[in-house]
Image 1 (tube, helix red, strand yellow):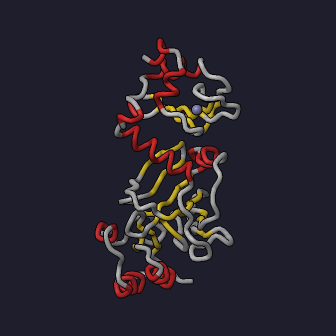
Image 2: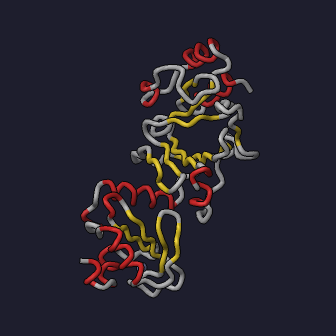
Image 3: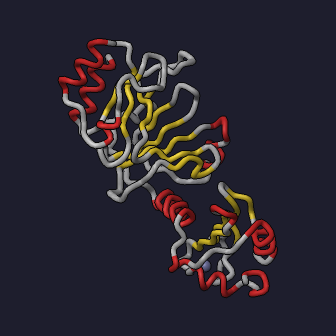
Length: 253
Ligand SMILES: [Zn+2]
């Protein structure tokens, strides 16, 4: 399928697409406008008519109702995501050997988040992803995984763990009073880990048994947010204050 017909198909399906320079990740046109509106078919025919070798990118965020998780194995992204369950949805093998996982937008603003986990970025408002059949600067084509083409499968909702990671990240940026101020510094992390059972290294931090409830499978996630704040989250439902209350106060004050 030519880039032009692919692009027009995506426009008709409700996605905002822009042309890229051939074998280049940079846009062929000023693209800010297409973060707010989809191109017309006339515009698309003009872009790819003038340059049939131009690549295609999806503008992420609300304009396309699209969020993409961008995994780069060169920075450990495959390991970061190995333990998480993924719903069946469209996925792309990128020209550099990474993966793009496509999800439906939840309606709440999702920003671009570099390094949500090591080697894993979130592409949201104000960002775009290179899409098939674009050619990477290294000469390799972006390709849909077999049976996982856009259109063959509906866009799945973002899974619970991904929404949680994004929310925790956003709270790390803008501390939320309901979840406490966070605890400071690497010393506090080591001291907290020293009080917990079943501590294991995990993507983005550690897991351990939650001290605030009878926990046999590690359901506490421990991370370090901006400014060295220790982030505590119990997947069993304990609140920040309950977890903190179960720890030695000498460490948490
Ligand atoms: Zn708990």
